[in-house]
Image (cartoon, rainbow, N blue to C red; front, side, top):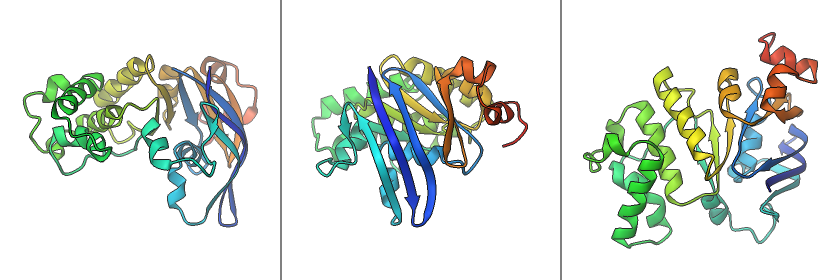
Length: 250
């Protein structure tokens, strides 16, 4: 089933035309990687999927993006509900200056939940899903800022999972991490795709090849190629794609 459908999407920041005629569809329970050189539009497109670009005053979108068959830029869409369904993990870990427990519980409390048992249960489950429970179960009241960078990023993933999204967007989630932490994040993504649809922006070609089923190559605001990851990396149809993945530019 197609979960995300973008049709002829154009994005402008003022007069700057940053995304041009982007059309693609993403199926449920898959990992899709967006690759391309810096400034090519991949993160901008990722942020259209949960309307994070709305915070930019000059942002304007033409075309249509549907999730579960509903236009997410329709007038009746409640953006808070959309962002609950479409979670986001950023490039740098951004835990709140609160305890580990309160970080994960935060989204539930914002939604108005005050059932302590439910919150405790969801915090534990989310930390287990994020492969962090074993490391923090005895220090839940400690500040999240005391964790290592890799642990903080998994905590941010747990925080995203706690509100039960169906889609998780990841904007270079491992780029600030060491190789061991990166491997843990990749293992985690592999496990999470059984329950979630994951879209990841990455500069790391090997990472895209390892973790995704489909890859989209963006260049200068255009979607040059979108195909099975194995095809993109072994048999690209466009010379620009081949040049990028072989390191000739970018």
